[in-house]
Structures are given as structure tokens and as C-alpha cells.
Image (cartoon, rainbow, N blue to C red; front, top):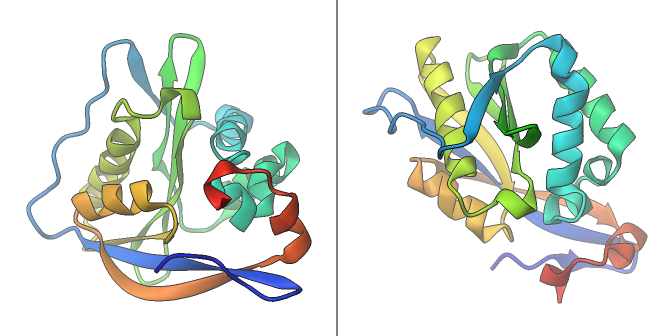
Length: 196
């Protein structure tokens, strides 16, 4: 069961570490609906990635589990940290645009063992349900395969059942259960419908 556990001072959120074998037959080629476009990483778009990330997660479950995602400055700091990591892969870091609007984001990192790590895959709520999350996931997986990586990994909050289903559909399997603590005040102040 994926409910959050609570104590007087702390709430625990169950998270899954999931992995996919990239040596298996490749996932489908990513495509975007008409009117949407891939925007590759460039340093000038760092703040744009942060702004999209903020819009994706500020009113979402992960905004509670990771409070920096509920804060625009926190998202900017996070993007700077990701871009400064030794394993950061610009080729696996994308935005999706729709006209003048940026509506989805994902970042890719290689860890020390040579595994591709999917980071902060998100789609702005008003653009969900159009296959954009699926396209972002496939895009980063194909980038990792082009670099010859055998595995990819991500973490997801268990209560985010839609994301868990998406990742399983792409071949990700559970490898480990983790728990993330959130102080009770942060949890109590989060006014998000899925908690009821």
C-alpha cells in the first residue's frame, strides 16, 4: 500500500527506485503531437527548465515530498546543481514547447557506475494526458542507449500511481523501496486534493 505514514513530527512517503534494462529491444521512438517541439539543452535555458519544473510540481505530490520543487528559487538552485554535476548529460536533457510556451522538462545524469538517471520528469498540469510524459521518458532513454548505457534508473513516489504505471509501461521494474521524510508542518500546510 502506498499511503504516507505519520508520526507527530514527521510524515514518511514511500518511494520506489525503478530500473530498466536498456540492452533489451529499444522502446518506441519518441514522438510529439502536432504543435509541440523538442528543445535541446543549452545553458541559457537553465532558468526555463527551472520555471517549467516549478509549474509541474508546485501543486503536486512531489512538491510536498521535495519542498524545493514548490519554490521557484528552489527549482533554480536545483537546476544549477544538476547542470554542475560531473555526470550531467546535456544530450539527455530536454524541454517540450507548445508555441511560445514550455510545457515539459526532463534531465539526464550518468552516475559513477555508468547508469543513466532520469531526473525530474514533469509536464505542466494543463498539458497532461497528451502523451508528453511518455515522450519525455522515451527521449531520455534513447539518449542513454546512444551513449551505450546498459541500465537506467529513476525514483518515484509510490502514491503517484499514474507515473508508476508510465514507468512500468516503459520497462522499468521495482528494485528498492525507500522512504522520504517530510516534517509534519510542511505536510499539514500542503493543500493538495490527493491527500484526502
